[in-house]
Length: 100
Image (tube, rainbow, N blue to C red; front, top):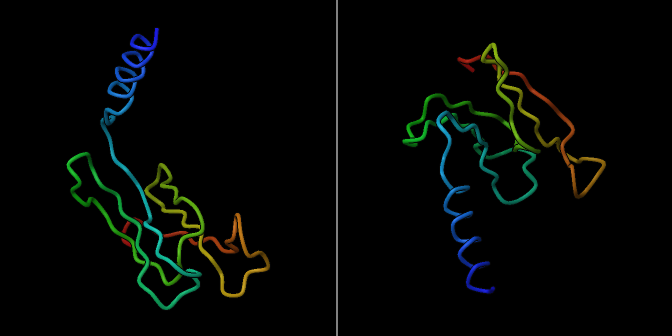
């Protein structure tokens, strides 16, 4: 029974771990408060990790960015001196065109 379960989990992991065709949008987080003073970026990459587009921001990311169907980037960011200190700290949203 244990061998069957291990085999099932291994095969499931291989099947689920395959990348989908398409692109990935992400904003890497940097340590600290994210309030500003650093370089903050959002990247759109294809499956070969080629950068398709890059946006630069003055503030750190609060959660995940979104790319709308019209190529507008919605970027939630952390404000300075937020009222919350954990969890969903953010406070601001910016919209960027494809060209920044």
